[in-house]
Length: 125
Image (cartoon, rainbow, N blue to C red):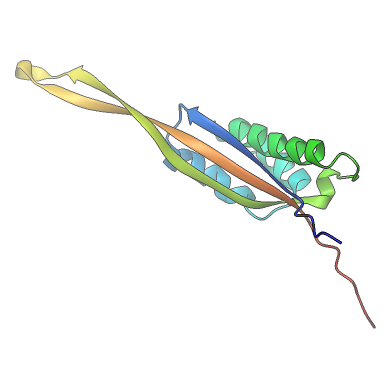
């Protein structure tokens, strides 16, 4: 019998928020169950919490779509991987005194979330 990998991935690309700020929120939910992670993100007072929550819910939905014959609730799924990479940087110029110019970097980020099904732990006495 084939061993199926109950995993699915969702990626948010070119999010117009700094990767450093998004990583703070991503670190809060790494390794947690999906239902707990969504609740944690709902009460987090960071601007990127809503964006990270959307990607986590999308990854869970992708797993449910991929394995429709299985019953996969949010309490059975956990965040296996979540990482934030740096996207493209838009370079802008701010005029400065005496004819100079200062550069402003408008950073973007890519969020990747991998959700997997928890393995049932068998207890033997």
